[in-house]
Amino acid sequence: MITIEQIRAARALLNWSQEELASAAVISKPAVANLERGSAQPRTETLNAIQKALEDGGMEFLDNTGVRLRGEKLNVQAFEGKNAIFRLWDDQFETLHHNGGVRMFFGIDEKNIDHLVGQKTFRNMMEKFHKNNITSKLLIREGDTYFVEPVSHYRWISNELFEQIPFCVYGNKYAINITSPHQQIIIIESKTIAESYRKQFEHIWENAKIPVTSPS
Image 1 (spheres, one colour):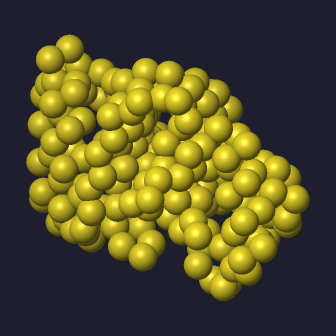
Image 2 (cartoon, rainbow, N blue to C red):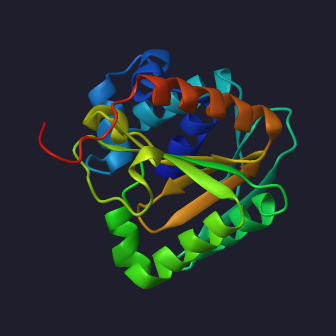
């Protein structure tokens, strides 16, 4: 039987919203949301319907709780535990530092990262990126004013969008962050997938709000 983590990862790979998955599986959107949050015990019939919908969409579920797009060989890395964020940063640096580039973050909460790794460590890593011509675009929750980078690097998105699975695009890589039941970052190297999510990100960025940092 598929796991909640596989459902999240498969939905992210297909670039489906919770509503799109619910429609494909012929179940309600709240049922998908509750399942992914782990706030409800799913019925076998529900899991089977979701698995069939995702498989019909082109996903393949692996015996080791992994997922992949059917017919595409992907280079996939999975980082787990408290060091996952550091390994992600190292991979971003190795991928981009030769020619520079942009890290695009969707659904990031930098205050939580500060608490996780320590404020000094976080800022030192960001300085390392900037010195090597690696910049960022960050889509954060509307109203969030906890800025580690220049304000121009941020845009506000609605709470509904923010609650989707966080992801990051850099180079030809796409990373998703799964925090339940423990920290796990999955990195997929695929030009096709990276370009698809980069276009999605840019569309959201163009329509997102510029943060307000002081009363008008």
